[in-house]
Length: 69
Image (cartoon, rainbow, N blue to C red; front, side):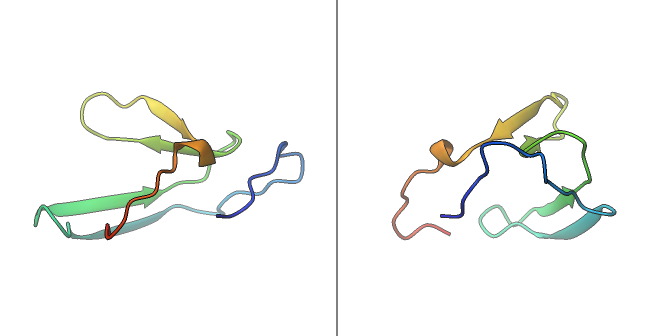
């Protein structure tokens, strides 16, 4: 697992957004992922499904998942 800093004083962000589209591995449905620049510290996930609230991500949310993609 990668190291996440305790502070983001020397942090950086993307210079511009990136969008990737494709077919979902398990659903077979068209999917889209957007990586967007932000002034917020850390990593955040926003699902565009009508409830567009941002959820901060952290290493303690990671669980072992054997044989999963």
